[in-house]
Length: 140
Image (cartoon, rainbow, N blue to C red):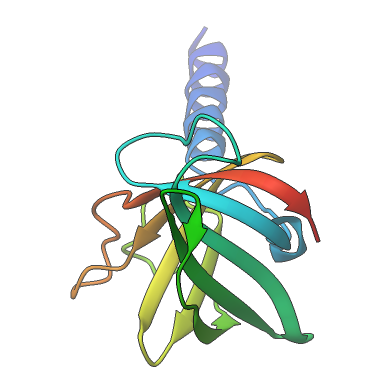
């Protein structure tokens, strides 16, 4: 009986440890053009919001081009190069992709092939709040 309890306890620990593992997502999955909005997912790719393009700089870096569409008109763009980095120990388990640049760090919750959430790192690298909800508009 004692052996059965020990096996059951070990299985419970293994299941809970497995539940806490970070899901692995290839950063290549975010290549393409996305439309982002604050507070909720944009209705369509024609909506106003942040037009974001993720592309490769080289095999270890991303170029993120961000513009804003207001009343159907796209504004000027900002270009930032990011390196793919390992997850910080303080990052929430729901984030799968981490990017770093001189402008700051981003965590990405890859919800599925057509939806992302962007979570900037706080000063203590805790990634506290989603700032943009993104809908895929074109594959990379």
